Length: 67
Image (tube, rainbow, N blue to C red):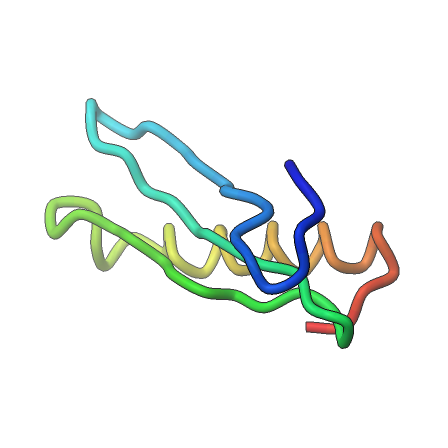
């Protein structure tokens, strides 16, 4: 992770059955922004997006950042 204001600072990435799912986020002076969630079609409908968002929320809480 890097700390450049307004730029992508982190990626939460999982590989499931040879497919990559990821969530990209950035940091601003107000907190963390969820920028992009990418989930391949074959992985959709399984709650993976919800799990990524939960992991992102947990990360923000640990860092004491607003989303």
